[in-house]
Length: 499
Image (cartoon, rainbow, N blue to C red; front, side, top):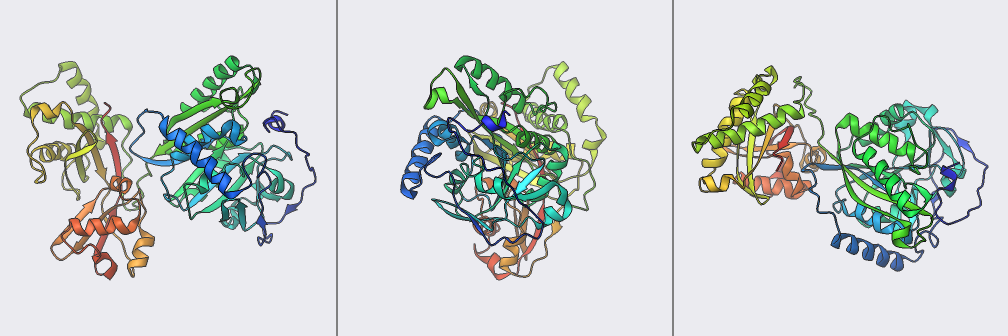
């Protein structure tokens, strides 16, 4: 019953008839906007102005909390009328770098029909006042788990939880395919496995549409919503327990948390508000939260059978790099700290041979970066050597001073073994690169250079990424277009210093 009350301050006529289409359903239709003019403006220019005003305001009041140096993987954002939840939805939208994603998997809760598992659209496109978005092909997912997915016409025609999120996505992404899925009661583990197959493309984003508590007095709502957000931020494995008036979207959020735990995504609270803050009475409010999830892609080199390092091992490597520099300047560390570090560093996994890089930054600006691509030395030895090389032998910078060491932030990257990337021409090369995942090496004759996967954060599109990499190697910037480069790729585990 709670899900049926989630439509904010609006009574709707519920059409209960539904048609379950077989997996081969025709996908020629365009799903037209249903809630334009009610939840958000129906006029294109009015809608653009409203979203721009909301995002401009959100940008001025954005949280100053530090976000991880990893890629955005998922978002939770609200789905009420823009007058109520638009302020929080705008904070979620701002987390999306413009045109960073080619696919959005959008999960929302069922408000209107009542079914188990998932309803997917039979349409080939979805339209809003901001334009038409192509719908991705569900056939692979249906072939794997046809019993979990059906096309329910009543849900497709009427559900608002997906539609009201879409204009915010269109404001950040100009070309992407949409995979809209409405969820009823479902097994989070099984549904998470199905949804994960849709996120294998590294330029895919998962967006979950969910509001928080409904119709509680303001102070009680704030208390309950904070508890709920704390559970989300802790990736609570007992999420499905104690769901009394916590979220309008418990099943989509449950799937999101299942994936976040499996992939070790880090959640960050972007914004919280309720209707009492925006456009409604404080006697009975609805809560809204925006949460972003960040994470690295696991190493995907099939020839690399090493187990990933743990966060504790990674933190120890970063500490080792700092202590190496501290000792260089003649200082010492407390014996208790040294003993704890030595216990972690004694792990056999850190004796394996891997390429490593050490990066130094001051005020988020590069201060030195040197490493080795090949697995010629144990991880521990490589981190020590490269910490010293990055500090004192990077030809782009003068040697690091002792005073600067106090301000330096240290990052350690542990590399998989580079593998050759076979490609036929420039277009094929662009298609085979995985932004945010692959470190790339280019070679031509004696000229060579590499960019770590972290560089995709500054150069998110493959074309400028390759052009800058060629220039770094001393080659013409457009050399990659000629198809005569030797290209290798690798992945990294990336650890940064907690400051």
